[in-house]
Image (cartoon, rainbow, N blue to C red; front, side, top):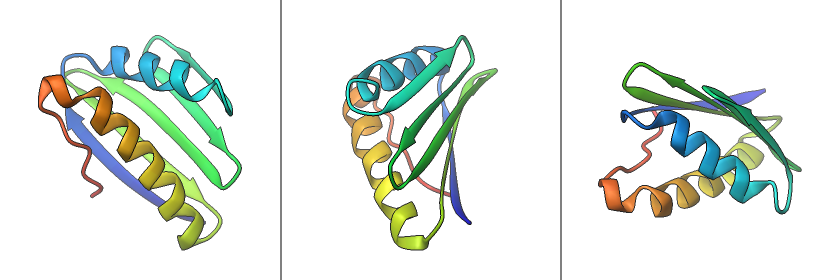
Length: 92
């Protein structure tokens, strides 16, 4: 199992979780509750957690290639949603 993690400093982690899950659930399974959310892609999964002043994004997949696909998809969407706040998702 391969995984990657990003931690983004933001006071609106819950808002980003909601936006991402609502957006993705039009095509794949996704759900959220307040400070946590998840998106299940065919190639892997993304878990989202809002903490005090940050958003944690963890992607997992069976292979490095599948992980890259999940991570790239999540990053491209997050970066578009967060452009007004000047935020960029960077994998650790």
